[in-house]
Length: 254
Picture 1 (cartoon, rainbow, N blue to C red):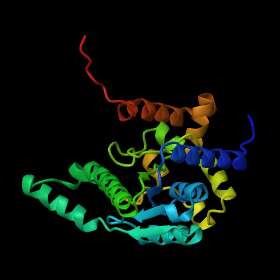
Picture 2 (picture 1 turned 90 degrees about the vertical axis):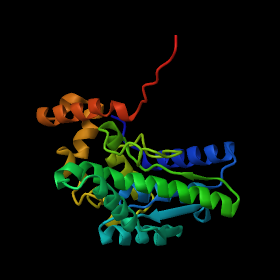
Picture 3 (picture 1 turned 60 degrees about the vertical axis):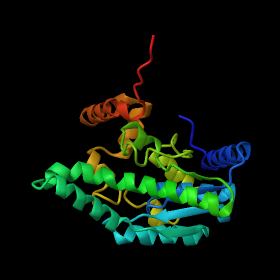
Picture 4 (picture 1 turned 120 degrees about the vertical axis):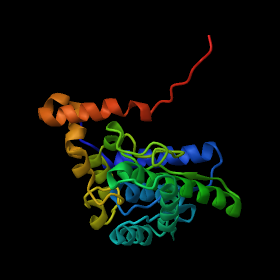
């Protein structure tokens, strides 16, 4: 296996972003800053590619962990891009209140999955709103930037209509370990770069929710037989069950 070259891949991503922006006369970038490694690495790449004045981060707390917002501020201060805090808690609570008027006897187990997925969908709408607003205010097109990595995408660990929606995806072809290597090269603060991955919404780490590690997922993508059978079976099922998230069946007339 060829050793991963973080400098080379970082330069390639930066060139990819710059070329796309130049080709379509684009101006700025908006992304959610979660306080985790993926959004930190992507924001660093954007600052390198576009300049800090053209990057805007959003913290979008929704019954979230305060530490995540602090880590987002750490990243924005380190790379010197603008960061806005747009709290979605009241919006989420009002949504839930409206649901309660339709269903009066819902149990927590009934709404758990719907509630967790509502949060990234509210975030998606917010990020696109800010992109449209900044486009108008600054008279240059802003894009929404995706922050999902290859491991998350492979097992479908994202919300359809939420964090799956974006205009350009810089790290979608890199595993978690590769993202960390890129982050090291870009000098992402260790406090964020080596933080246990979580969605900041469900109060559990990604790996706790999945029941497999990102290292196992990366190994499975390259050589499935290297992964222990129980983990291999879980990853295979996750991947198969995620197909509907990537394609929209469309009826075509004969």
